[in-house]
Length: 548
Image (cartoon, rainbow, N blue to C red):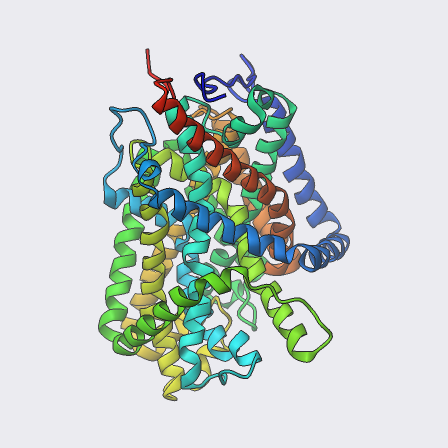
Protein backbone atom coordinates (compact mmCIF):
# COMPACT_ATOMS: atom_id res chain seq x y z
CA UNK A 1 0.00 0.00 0.00
CA UNK A 2 1.01 3.64 -0.55
CA UNK A 3 0.83 4.33 3.19
CA UNK A 4 4.12 2.56 3.83
CA UNK A 5 7.52 2.59 2.06
CA UNK A 6 7.89 0.29 -0.97
CA UNK A 7 9.97 -2.88 -1.02
CA UNK A 8 13.61 -1.80 -0.86
CA UNK A 9 15.32 -5.14 -0.41
CA UNK A 10 15.02 -8.22 -2.57
CA UNK A 11 17.08 -11.20 -1.51
CA UNK A 12 18.44 -13.37 -4.35
CA UNK A 13 20.38 -16.41 -3.23
CA UNK A 14 23.92 -16.58 -4.62
CA UNK A 15 26.71 -19.09 -4.04
CA UNK A 16 29.17 -18.19 -1.28
CA UNK A 17 32.11 -20.13 -2.71
CA UNK A 18 33.25 -22.29 -5.57
CA UNK A 19 32.97 -21.81 -9.31
CA UNK A 20 29.64 -19.96 -9.02
CA UNK A 21 30.67 -17.73 -6.12
CA UNK A 22 28.59 -14.55 -6.31
CA UNK A 23 26.24 -16.01 -8.94
CA UNK A 24 22.70 -17.32 -8.72
CA UNK A 25 23.08 -21.01 -9.59
CA UNK A 26 19.38 -21.29 -10.42
CA UNK A 27 19.71 -18.65 -13.13
CA UNK A 28 23.27 -19.20 -14.35
CA UNK A 29 23.16 -22.99 -14.67
CA UNK A 30 19.66 -23.10 -16.17
CA UNK A 31 20.58 -20.43 -18.74
CA UNK A 32 23.76 -22.24 -19.70
CA UNK A 33 21.93 -25.56 -20.07
CA UNK A 34 19.23 -24.05 -22.30
CA UNK A 35 21.67 -22.17 -24.53
CA UNK A 36 24.02 -25.17 -24.73
CA UNK A 37 21.09 -27.41 -25.69
CA UNK A 38 20.18 -25.03 -28.50
CA UNK A 39 23.77 -25.07 -29.77
CA UNK A 40 24.04 -28.87 -29.67
CA UNK A 41 20.63 -29.29 -31.30
CA UNK A 42 21.32 -26.82 -34.13
CA UNK A 43 24.74 -28.27 -34.93
CA UNK A 44 24.10 -32.01 -34.44
CA UNK A 45 20.70 -32.30 -36.18
CA UNK A 46 20.41 -29.16 -38.34
CA UNK A 47 17.58 -30.49 -40.54
CA UNK A 48 15.39 -31.33 -37.55
CA UNK A 49 16.23 -28.03 -35.83
CA UNK A 50 15.38 -26.06 -38.97
CA UNK A 51 12.07 -27.91 -39.45
CA UNK A 52 10.94 -27.46 -35.85
CA UNK A 53 12.01 -23.82 -35.66
CA UNK A 54 10.29 -22.98 -38.95
CA UNK A 55 7.08 -24.68 -37.84
CA UNK A 56 7.08 -22.77 -34.55
CA UNK A 57 7.91 -19.53 -36.35
CA UNK A 58 4.97 -19.97 -38.73
CA UNK A 59 2.66 -20.68 -35.80
CA UNK A 60 3.81 -17.57 -33.93
CA UNK A 61 3.55 -15.28 -36.95
CA UNK A 62 0.03 -16.55 -37.58
CA UNK A 63 -1.24 -16.22 -34.01
CA UNK A 64 0.89 -13.57 -32.31
CA UNK A 65 1.54 -10.92 -34.99
CA UNK A 66 -1.06 -8.59 -33.46
CA UNK A 67 0.41 -9.18 -29.99
CA UNK A 68 3.80 -7.89 -31.11
CA UNK A 69 2.24 -4.92 -32.94
CA UNK A 70 0.06 -3.77 -30.04
CA UNK A 71 2.63 -4.33 -27.28
CA UNK A 72 5.29 -2.24 -29.01
CA UNK A 73 2.72 0.53 -29.57
CA UNK A 74 1.89 0.37 -25.86
CA UNK A 75 5.57 0.65 -24.87
CA UNK A 76 6.10 3.77 -26.99
CA UNK A 77 2.94 5.54 -25.82
CA UNK A 78 3.71 4.77 -22.17
CA UNK A 79 7.27 6.12 -22.37
CA UNK A 80 6.16 9.40 -23.90
CA UNK A 81 3.31 9.82 -21.40
CA UNK A 82 5.68 9.32 -18.46
CA UNK A 83 8.10 11.88 -19.92
CA UNK A 84 5.43 14.47 -20.68
CA UNK A 85 3.67 14.43 -17.29
CA UNK A 86 5.48 17.10 -15.23
CA UNK A 87 5.44 15.21 -11.95
CA UNK A 88 6.86 11.99 -13.42
CA UNK A 89 9.21 13.58 -15.94
CA UNK A 90 11.23 15.27 -13.20
CA UNK A 91 11.74 12.07 -11.18
CA UNK A 92 15.41 11.29 -10.76
CA UNK A 93 16.72 7.82 -11.53
CA UNK A 94 18.68 7.70 -8.33
CA UNK A 95 18.96 9.41 -4.98
CA UNK A 96 18.89 13.17 -4.48
CA UNK A 97 22.66 13.67 -4.71
CA UNK A 98 23.36 11.27 -7.57
CA UNK A 99 25.07 12.77 -10.63
CA UNK A 100 25.46 11.17 -14.10
CA UNK A 101 28.60 9.02 -14.28
CA UNK A 102 29.26 9.65 -17.97
CA UNK A 103 29.35 12.77 -20.12
CA UNK A 104 26.50 13.22 -22.60
CA UNK A 105 28.79 12.30 -25.52
CA UNK A 106 29.95 9.05 -23.89
CA UNK A 107 26.37 8.33 -22.79
CA UNK A 108 25.00 8.73 -26.33
CA UNK A 109 27.96 6.84 -27.80
CA UNK A 110 27.53 3.78 -25.59
CA UNK A 111 23.75 3.86 -26.03
CA UNK A 112 23.91 4.07 -29.82
CA UNK A 113 26.75 1.58 -30.19
CA UNK A 114 25.11 -1.08 -28.04
CA UNK A 115 21.57 -0.45 -29.21
CA UNK A 116 21.71 -0.22 -32.95
CA UNK A 117 25.18 0.61 -34.29
CA UNK A 118 25.78 -2.61 -36.25
CA UNK A 119 22.39 -2.39 -37.89
CA UNK A 120 23.10 1.09 -39.19
CA UNK A 121 26.03 -0.11 -41.30
CA UNK A 122 23.94 -2.88 -42.87
CA UNK A 123 20.45 -1.44 -42.98
CA UNK A 124 21.08 2.26 -43.63
CA UNK A 125 21.55 1.12 -47.22
CA UNK A 126 19.58 -2.12 -47.34
CA UNK A 127 16.35 -1.03 -45.65
CA UNK A 128 15.51 2.07 -47.75
CA UNK A 129 16.59 0.20 -50.89
CA UNK A 130 14.30 -2.72 -50.17
CA UNK A 131 11.31 -0.50 -49.40
CA UNK A 132 12.15 1.58 -52.48
CA UNK A 133 11.38 -1.60 -54.43
CA UNK A 134 8.31 -2.74 -52.52
CA UNK A 135 6.33 -1.86 -49.39
CA UNK A 136 2.65 -1.74 -48.38
CA UNK A 137 2.10 1.39 -50.47
CA UNK A 138 3.32 -0.49 -53.55
CA UNK A 139 1.25 -3.56 -52.67
CA UNK A 140 -1.84 -1.35 -52.31
CA UNK A 141 -1.12 0.34 -55.66
CA UNK A 142 -0.49 3.76 -54.10
CA UNK A 143 3.13 3.93 -55.31
CA UNK A 144 5.31 2.27 -57.91
CA UNK A 145 8.47 0.40 -57.03
CA UNK A 146 11.79 1.99 -58.05
CA UNK A 147 10.01 5.25 -58.91
CA UNK A 148 10.24 8.79 -57.55
CA UNK A 149 6.80 8.57 -55.92
CA UNK A 150 8.01 5.67 -53.76
CA UNK A 151 10.92 7.50 -52.12
CA UNK A 152 8.90 8.99 -49.26
CA UNK A 153 7.05 5.72 -48.46
CA UNK A 154 10.40 3.91 -48.44
CA UNK A 155 11.63 6.28 -45.74
CA UNK A 156 8.41 6.14 -43.73
CA UNK A 157 8.62 2.35 -43.41
CA UNK A 158 12.35 2.51 -42.67
CA UNK A 159 11.76 5.09 -39.93
CA UNK A 160 8.93 3.01 -38.48
CA UNK A 161 11.23 0.03 -37.97
CA UNK A 162 14.33 1.87 -36.76
CA UNK A 163 12.82 4.88 -35.00
CA UNK A 164 10.85 5.58 -31.85
CA UNK A 165 9.30 2.11 -31.57
CA UNK A 166 12.64 0.30 -31.50
CA UNK A 167 14.14 2.57 -28.88
CA UNK A 168 10.98 2.53 -26.77
CA UNK A 169 11.47 -1.22 -26.23
CA UNK A 170 14.99 -0.59 -24.95
CA UNK A 171 14.03 2.50 -22.97
CA UNK A 172 11.16 0.81 -21.15
CA UNK A 173 13.32 -2.00 -19.77
CA UNK A 174 16.13 0.40 -18.88
CA UNK A 175 13.74 2.83 -17.21
CA UNK A 176 12.12 0.10 -15.14
CA UNK A 177 15.47 -1.26 -13.95
CA UNK A 178 16.97 2.17 -13.25
CA UNK A 179 13.85 3.21 -11.33
CA UNK A 180 13.81 0.20 -9.05
CA UNK A 181 17.57 -0.25 -8.73
CA UNK A 182 18.61 3.36 -8.12
CA UNK A 183 15.52 4.66 -6.31
CA UNK A 184 14.73 1.53 -4.28
CA UNK A 185 18.16 -0.12 -4.07
CA UNK A 186 16.94 -3.35 -5.66
CA UNK A 187 19.28 -5.63 -7.65
CA UNK A 188 20.02 -4.52 -11.22
CA UNK A 189 18.34 -7.52 -12.77
CA UNK A 190 15.14 -8.04 -14.73
CA UNK A 191 13.08 -9.48 -11.89
CA UNK A 192 13.39 -6.23 -9.91
CA UNK A 193 11.13 -4.54 -12.45
CA UNK A 194 8.24 -6.77 -11.36
CA UNK A 195 8.40 -6.16 -7.59
CA UNK A 196 5.25 -3.98 -7.48
CA UNK A 197 3.31 -7.00 -8.77
CA UNK A 198 5.00 -10.04 -7.21
CA UNK A 199 6.86 -8.54 -4.25
CA UNK A 200 9.20 -10.78 -2.27
CA UNK A 201 8.05 -13.86 -4.20
CA UNK A 202 10.58 -12.79 -6.85
CA UNK A 203 13.32 -14.08 -4.56
CA UNK A 204 12.22 -17.58 -5.54
CA UNK A 205 11.15 -19.54 -8.61
CA UNK A 206 9.19 -16.75 -10.30
CA UNK A 207 12.19 -14.46 -10.22
CA UNK A 208 14.54 -17.18 -11.46
CA UNK A 209 12.25 -17.89 -14.43
CA UNK A 210 12.06 -14.19 -15.34
CA UNK A 211 15.85 -13.80 -15.33
CA UNK A 212 16.39 -17.02 -17.31
CA UNK A 213 13.91 -15.85 -19.95
CA UNK A 214 15.80 -12.55 -20.14
CA UNK A 215 19.17 -14.28 -20.56
CA UNK A 216 17.94 -16.58 -23.35
CA UNK A 217 16.20 -13.69 -25.14
CA UNK A 218 19.38 -11.64 -24.86
CA UNK A 219 21.57 -14.35 -26.37
CA UNK A 220 19.17 -14.85 -29.29
CA UNK A 221 18.62 -11.12 -29.87
CA UNK A 222 22.33 -10.37 -29.82
CA UNK A 223 22.97 -13.41 -32.03
CA UNK A 224 20.65 -11.91 -34.65
CA UNK A 225 22.52 -8.61 -34.55
CA UNK A 226 25.93 -10.27 -34.67
CA UNK A 227 24.75 -12.51 -37.50
CA UNK A 228 24.03 -9.49 -39.69
CA UNK A 229 27.32 -7.92 -38.65
CA UNK A 230 29.40 -11.04 -39.25
CA UNK A 231 28.08 -11.38 -42.80
CA UNK A 232 28.93 -7.75 -43.57
CA UNK A 233 32.30 -8.02 -41.83
CA UNK A 234 33.28 -11.03 -43.96
CA UNK A 235 32.09 -9.20 -47.09
CA UNK A 236 34.28 -6.25 -46.08
CA UNK A 237 37.31 -8.47 -45.46
CA UNK A 238 36.86 -9.92 -48.92
CA UNK A 239 36.51 -6.43 -50.41
CA UNK A 240 39.78 -5.21 -48.91
CA UNK A 241 41.64 -8.19 -50.34
CA UNK A 242 41.65 -11.01 -47.80
CA UNK A 243 40.65 -13.46 -50.52
CA UNK A 244 37.70 -15.27 -52.05
CA UNK A 245 38.05 -18.26 -49.71
CA UNK A 246 35.97 -16.49 -47.07
CA UNK A 247 33.01 -15.72 -49.30
CA UNK A 248 30.70 -17.74 -51.55
CA UNK A 249 29.73 -16.79 -55.11
CA UNK A 250 26.38 -15.43 -53.86
CA UNK A 251 28.17 -13.07 -51.47
CA UNK A 252 27.39 -15.04 -48.30
CA UNK A 253 30.31 -16.02 -46.03
CA UNK A 254 31.81 -19.49 -46.15
CA UNK A 255 32.09 -21.57 -42.99
CA UNK A 256 35.77 -20.61 -42.84
CA UNK A 257 34.83 -16.94 -43.16
CA UNK A 258 32.32 -17.17 -40.32
CA UNK A 259 34.83 -18.91 -38.07
CA UNK A 260 37.56 -16.36 -38.85
CA UNK A 261 35.23 -13.43 -38.19
CA UNK A 262 33.98 -14.87 -34.90
CA UNK A 263 37.51 -15.62 -33.68
CA UNK A 264 38.47 -11.98 -34.25
CA UNK A 265 35.24 -10.42 -32.96
CA UNK A 266 34.56 -12.59 -29.94
CA UNK A 267 38.22 -12.75 -28.93
CA UNK A 268 38.41 -8.95 -28.85
CA UNK A 269 35.00 -8.59 -27.19
CA UNK A 270 35.82 -11.08 -24.44
CA UNK A 271 39.02 -9.19 -23.65
CA UNK A 272 37.08 -5.92 -23.61
CA UNK A 273 34.39 -7.40 -21.37
CA UNK A 274 37.05 -8.51 -18.90
CA UNK A 275 38.12 -4.86 -18.60
CA UNK A 276 34.58 -3.64 -17.74
CA UNK A 277 32.26 -0.82 -18.84
CA UNK A 278 34.42 2.06 -17.64
CA UNK A 279 37.46 1.00 -19.65
CA UNK A 280 37.21 -1.16 -22.76
CA UNK A 281 33.54 -0.60 -23.60
CA UNK A 282 33.70 3.17 -23.02
CA UNK A 283 36.87 3.51 -25.11
CA UNK A 284 35.49 1.41 -27.97
CA UNK A 285 32.17 3.29 -27.89
CA UNK A 286 33.90 6.63 -28.22
CA UNK A 287 36.07 5.25 -31.04
CA UNK A 288 33.18 3.88 -33.06
CA UNK A 289 31.16 7.06 -32.56
CA UNK A 290 34.10 9.09 -33.88
CA UNK A 291 34.48 6.80 -36.90
CA UNK A 292 30.70 6.94 -37.43
CA UNK A 293 30.81 10.72 -37.61
CA UNK A 294 33.70 10.48 -40.07
CA UNK A 295 31.73 8.11 -42.34
CA UNK A 296 28.67 10.31 -41.98
CA UNK A 297 30.71 13.39 -42.95
CA UNK A 298 32.05 11.50 -45.98
CA UNK A 299 28.56 10.78 -47.28
CA UNK A 300 27.46 14.35 -46.54
CA UNK A 301 30.31 15.61 -48.73
CA UNK A 302 30.35 13.01 -51.49
CA UNK A 303 26.91 11.42 -51.34
CA UNK A 304 23.50 12.62 -52.52
CA UNK A 305 23.04 14.98 -49.59
CA UNK A 306 20.39 17.30 -51.06
CA UNK A 307 18.36 14.37 -52.35
CA UNK A 308 18.64 12.72 -48.94
CA UNK A 309 17.69 15.89 -47.04
CA UNK A 310 14.56 16.29 -49.14
CA UNK A 311 13.69 12.63 -48.60
CA UNK A 312 14.38 12.96 -44.87
CA UNK A 313 12.11 15.97 -44.42
CA UNK A 314 9.26 14.48 -46.43
CA UNK A 315 9.67 11.06 -44.86
CA UNK A 316 9.96 12.41 -41.31
CA UNK A 317 6.82 14.54 -41.64
CA UNK A 318 4.84 11.65 -43.09
CA UNK A 319 6.24 9.30 -40.46
CA UNK A 320 5.22 11.51 -37.53
CA UNK A 321 1.76 12.17 -39.00
CA UNK A 322 1.05 8.53 -39.82
CA UNK A 323 2.78 7.01 -36.76
CA UNK A 324 -0.40 6.60 -34.64
CA UNK A 325 -2.06 4.63 -37.43
CA UNK A 326 1.06 2.64 -38.34
CA UNK A 327 1.56 1.59 -34.72
CA UNK A 328 -1.78 -0.24 -34.52
CA UNK A 329 -2.32 -1.43 -38.11
CA UNK A 330 -2.46 -5.23 -38.34
CA UNK A 331 -2.86 -7.00 -41.68
CA UNK A 332 -4.22 -10.53 -41.62
CA UNK A 333 -4.46 -13.05 -44.48
CA UNK A 334 -7.92 -12.76 -46.03
CA UNK A 335 -7.65 -14.99 -49.07
CA UNK A 336 -7.10 -12.08 -51.47
CA UNK A 337 -3.82 -11.46 -53.25
CA UNK A 338 -3.44 -7.99 -51.71
CA UNK A 339 -4.46 -9.00 -48.19
CA UNK A 340 -2.19 -12.03 -48.14
CA UNK A 341 0.72 -9.99 -49.53
CA UNK A 342 0.28 -7.30 -46.87
CA UNK A 343 0.14 -9.89 -44.07
CA UNK A 344 3.24 -11.64 -45.42
CA UNK A 345 5.09 -8.33 -45.70
CA UNK A 346 4.20 -7.32 -42.14
CA UNK A 347 5.20 -10.73 -40.77
CA UNK A 348 8.56 -10.60 -42.53
CA UNK A 349 9.31 -6.99 -41.62
CA UNK A 350 7.41 -5.24 -38.83
CA UNK A 351 6.70 -8.33 -36.70
CA UNK A 352 10.27 -9.53 -37.19
CA UNK A 353 11.64 -6.15 -36.11
CA UNK A 354 9.39 -5.89 -33.07
CA UNK A 355 10.48 -9.38 -31.99
CA UNK A 356 14.12 -8.43 -32.61
CA UNK A 357 13.90 -5.26 -30.53
CA UNK A 358 12.09 -7.10 -27.73
CA UNK A 359 14.70 -9.88 -27.70
CA UNK A 360 17.41 -7.21 -27.68
CA UNK A 361 15.68 -5.21 -24.93
CA UNK A 362 16.96 -7.02 -21.80
CA UNK A 363 20.54 -6.54 -22.97
CA UNK A 364 20.22 -2.91 -24.04
CA UNK A 365 17.82 -2.12 -21.19
CA UNK A 366 20.17 -3.34 -18.45
CA UNK A 367 23.04 -1.56 -20.20
CA UNK A 368 21.07 1.71 -20.43
CA UNK A 369 20.20 1.45 -16.74
CA UNK A 370 23.86 0.90 -15.82
CA UNK A 371 24.97 4.09 -17.60
CA UNK A 372 21.98 6.34 -16.75
CA UNK A 373 22.08 6.71 -12.98
CA UNK A 374 21.47 10.28 -11.83
CA UNK A 375 19.47 11.43 -14.85
CA UNK A 376 15.86 12.57 -14.73
CA UNK A 377 13.14 10.38 -16.21
CA UNK A 378 12.41 12.96 -18.94
CA UNK A 379 16.11 13.35 -19.77
CA UNK A 380 16.40 9.58 -19.97
CA UNK A 381 13.41 9.20 -22.34
CA UNK A 382 14.60 11.97 -24.66
CA UNK A 383 18.15 10.66 -24.56
CA UNK A 384 17.24 7.01 -25.12
CA UNK A 385 14.38 7.35 -27.64
CA UNK A 386 14.38 10.69 -29.47
CA UNK A 387 18.11 11.36 -29.91
CA UNK A 388 19.12 7.86 -31.12
CA UNK A 389 16.11 7.77 -33.46
CA UNK A 390 17.15 11.07 -35.03
CA UNK A 391 20.67 9.68 -35.46
CA UNK A 392 19.20 6.67 -37.28
CA UNK A 393 17.12 8.94 -39.50
CA UNK A 394 20.19 10.97 -40.47
CA UNK A 395 22.06 7.78 -41.35
CA UNK A 396 19.19 6.65 -43.54
CA UNK A 397 19.15 10.08 -45.14
CA UNK A 398 22.79 10.27 -46.21
CA UNK A 399 23.57 6.58 -46.83
CA UNK A 400 20.23 5.19 -47.98
CA UNK A 401 19.45 8.41 -49.84
CA UNK A 402 22.66 8.10 -51.83
CA UNK A 403 21.85 4.50 -52.75
CA UNK A 404 18.32 5.39 -53.86
CA UNK A 405 19.49 8.44 -55.83
CA UNK A 406 22.21 6.47 -57.66
CA UNK A 407 19.60 3.83 -58.55
CA UNK A 408 16.89 6.33 -59.48
CA UNK A 409 19.09 8.40 -61.80
CA UNK A 410 20.53 5.31 -63.47
CA UNK A 411 24.13 5.79 -62.37
CA UNK A 412 24.18 2.53 -60.43
CA UNK A 413 21.91 0.51 -62.68
CA UNK A 414 20.87 -2.43 -60.56
CA UNK A 415 24.34 -2.89 -58.98
CA UNK A 416 23.28 -1.82 -55.47
CA UNK A 417 19.86 -3.44 -55.55
CA UNK A 418 21.13 -6.79 -56.86
CA UNK A 419 23.92 -7.04 -54.25
CA UNK A 420 23.22 -8.83 -50.98
CA UNK A 421 22.45 -6.59 -48.02
CA UNK A 422 25.85 -7.42 -46.54
CA UNK A 423 27.60 -6.02 -49.68
CA UNK A 424 25.46 -3.03 -50.67
CA UNK A 425 27.46 -0.44 -48.72
CA UNK A 426 30.75 -1.61 -50.29
CA UNK A 427 29.20 -1.64 -53.78
CA UNK A 428 28.03 1.93 -53.26
CA UNK A 429 31.49 3.05 -52.14
CA UNK A 430 32.96 1.54 -55.31
CA UNK A 431 30.46 3.53 -57.38
CA UNK A 432 31.23 6.82 -55.63
CA UNK A 433 35.01 6.42 -55.41
CA UNK A 434 37.68 4.64 -57.41
CA UNK A 435 40.89 2.71 -56.89
CA UNK A 436 42.83 3.17 -53.69
CA UNK A 437 40.40 5.69 -52.18
CA UNK A 438 37.52 3.20 -52.42
CA UNK A 439 39.72 0.55 -50.81
CA UNK A 440 40.66 2.95 -47.99
CA UNK A 441 37.01 3.78 -47.26
CA UNK A 442 36.16 0.07 -47.30
CA UNK A 443 38.92 -0.47 -44.74
CA UNK A 444 37.48 2.27 -42.51
CA UNK A 445 34.03 0.66 -42.75
CA UNK A 446 35.51 -2.72 -41.78
CA UNK A 447 37.25 -1.19 -38.75
CA UNK A 448 34.08 0.66 -37.75
CA UNK A 449 32.03 -2.49 -38.14
CA UNK A 450 34.53 -4.41 -36.00
CA UNK A 451 34.28 -1.82 -33.20
CA UNK A 452 30.48 -1.99 -33.28
CA UNK A 453 30.53 -5.78 -33.25
CA UNK A 454 32.98 -5.88 -30.35
CA UNK A 455 31.07 -3.22 -28.40
CA UNK A 456 27.78 -5.10 -28.83
CA UNK A 457 29.25 -8.50 -27.96
CA UNK A 458 31.23 -7.42 -24.91
CA UNK A 459 28.31 -5.39 -23.57
CA UNK A 460 26.04 -8.41 -24.01
CA UNK A 461 28.48 -10.68 -22.20
CA UNK A 462 28.68 -8.28 -19.25
CA UNK A 463 24.91 -7.87 -19.10
CA UNK A 464 24.26 -11.60 -19.15
CA UNK A 465 26.80 -11.98 -16.36
CA UNK A 466 25.09 -9.18 -14.41
CA UNK A 467 21.72 -10.94 -14.62
CA UNK A 468 23.30 -14.27 -13.62
CA UNK A 469 25.04 -12.59 -10.68
CA UNK A 470 21.76 -11.32 -9.16
CA UNK A 471 22.31 -7.80 -10.48
CA UNK A 472 25.90 -7.28 -9.32
CA UNK A 473 27.20 -4.43 -11.48
CA UNK A 474 30.75 -5.77 -11.72
CA UNK A 475 30.59 -9.55 -11.31
CA UNK A 476 34.06 -11.02 -10.97
CA UNK A 477 33.46 -14.21 -12.92
CA UNK A 478 36.17 -14.36 -15.57
CA UNK A 479 35.39 -18.00 -16.48
CA UNK A 480 31.72 -17.06 -16.93
CA UNK A 481 32.64 -14.14 -19.21
CA UNK A 482 34.71 -16.54 -21.30
CA UNK A 483 31.86 -19.08 -21.33
CA UNK A 484 29.28 -16.60 -22.57
CA UNK A 485 31.70 -15.22 -25.17
CA UNK A 486 32.22 -18.75 -26.45
CA UNK A 487 28.51 -19.60 -26.26
CA UNK A 488 27.54 -16.49 -28.20
CA UNK A 489 30.13 -17.38 -30.86
CA UNK A 490 28.75 -20.91 -31.16
CA UNK A 491 25.13 -19.74 -31.37
CA UNK A 492 25.96 -17.27 -34.14
CA UNK A 493 28.41 -19.53 -35.95
CA UNK A 494 26.38 -22.71 -35.58
CA UNK A 495 23.10 -21.19 -36.78
CA UNK A 496 24.80 -19.25 -39.60
CA UNK A 497 26.60 -22.30 -40.91
CA UNK A 498 23.68 -24.72 -40.71
CA UNK A 499 20.86 -22.39 -41.75
CA UNK A 500 22.09 -18.87 -42.44
CA UNK A 501 20.48 -15.75 -41.00
CA UNK A 502 17.06 -17.35 -41.43
CA UNK A 503 17.84 -19.88 -38.69
CA UNK A 504 18.93 -17.14 -36.26
CA UNK A 505 15.91 -15.03 -37.19
CA UNK A 506 13.52 -17.90 -36.52
CA UNK A 507 15.08 -18.77 -33.16
CA UNK A 508 15.05 -15.12 -32.13
CA UNK A 509 11.35 -14.54 -32.96
CA UNK A 510 10.47 -17.59 -30.85
CA UNK A 511 12.73 -16.56 -27.95
CA UNK A 512 11.30 -13.04 -27.89
CA UNK A 513 7.72 -14.12 -27.17
CA UNK A 514 8.14 -15.03 -23.47
CA UNK A 515 10.08 -11.87 -22.78
CA UNK A 516 7.41 -9.74 -24.46
CA UNK A 517 5.05 -10.87 -21.69
CA UNK A 518 7.67 -9.97 -19.09
CA UNK A 519 7.97 -6.50 -20.65
CA UNK A 520 4.21 -5.92 -20.51
CA UNK A 521 4.25 -6.84 -16.82
CA UNK A 522 7.24 -4.51 -16.28
CA UNK A 523 5.27 -1.67 -17.87
CA UNK A 524 2.27 -2.14 -15.60
CA UNK A 525 4.54 -2.55 -12.57
CA UNK A 526 6.32 0.71 -13.41
CA UNK A 527 3.05 2.63 -13.74
CA UNK A 528 1.87 1.21 -10.41
CA UNK A 529 5.14 2.21 -8.72
CA UNK A 530 5.14 5.75 -10.12
CA UNK A 531 1.53 6.37 -9.06
CA UNK A 532 2.03 4.99 -5.56
CA UNK A 533 5.32 6.84 -5.08
CA UNK A 534 3.51 10.06 -5.95
CA UNK A 535 0.94 9.32 -3.26
CA UNK A 536 3.72 8.47 -0.79
CA UNK A 537 5.46 11.78 -1.41
CA UNK A 538 2.24 13.71 -0.81
CA UNK A 539 1.72 11.82 2.45
CA UNK A 540 5.32 12.24 3.58
CA UNK A 541 6.08 8.53 3.27
CA UNK A 542 9.57 7.45 2.19
CA UNK A 543 9.67 6.38 -1.48
CA UNK A 544 13.41 6.56 -2.24
CA UNK A 545 16.09 4.48 -0.55
CA UNK A 546 18.48 6.54 1.55
CA UNK A 547 22.02 5.21 1.87
CA UNK A 548 23.13 4.78 5.49
